[in-house]
Figure (cartoon, rainbow, N blue to C red):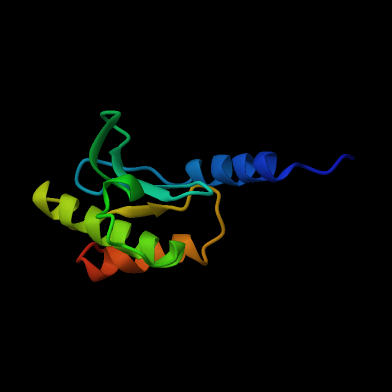
Length: 118
């Protein structure tokens, strides 16, 4: 049996997570996308198929000179602020097939610091 590429393994993990995690209007799904350059997150209502709030490394101030984990924590705090403005307090976490450590964990901790519960 041939081994999976890194991209295919992540896609397989993401499909497995998506089979179990579903977002609603009152408790949306926090989706994480991680690239080599930065990180993005959004709150999605799967019932209506719309994004309720989003945050990205591209929207951060240029003065953020920390490493990528600090950048991810800042994106998490920005997402929590956007969620609060949209009237959202709780969500379910979808790590997107990524392992829960490093930047993904930093984003989750930053969102919790900002007041989002999951």
